[in-house]
Length: 94
Image (cartoon, rainbow, N blue to C red; front, side, top):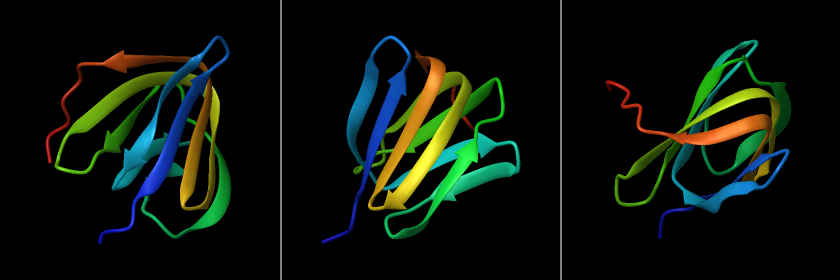
């Protein structure tokens, strides 16, 4: 069975989304970062504005526009804490 990453996307006003993912991609002030299950712990400052992509099991990809926030990774869990966060219909070319 494939290991999954638990992802929480939280804005100042509400929890936006929570669930399992194969991968999380976020742009920090240090550059774009891909997070897989088992990633080393880290805390990063999100570039603003930026797009966060959540690659779900089965191939679905969810995109969220975020501003002014942080990314926290602890092994099998990743949390985005953002000033604003909303679902986006953006599609990223692979």
